Image (tube, rainbow, N blue to C red; front, top):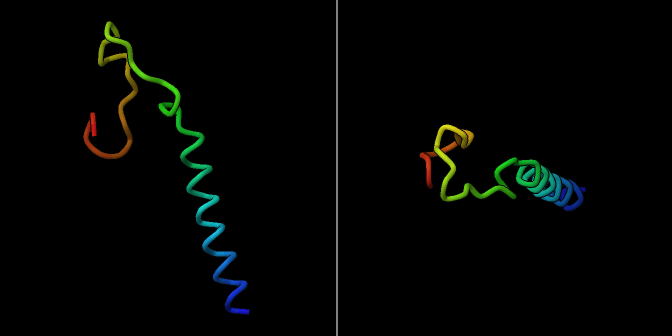
Length: 50
């Protein structure tokens, strides 16, 4: 019972992390050299450029 529960929790958390990473808008987008910072969406977490 405990083995199945621990597997379900760990795999569920990995699935949640993958889902949250894949739905990010900035995953496929790289700002060009002529794009100003005002057009770039502010990051939700951490300092800019980190």
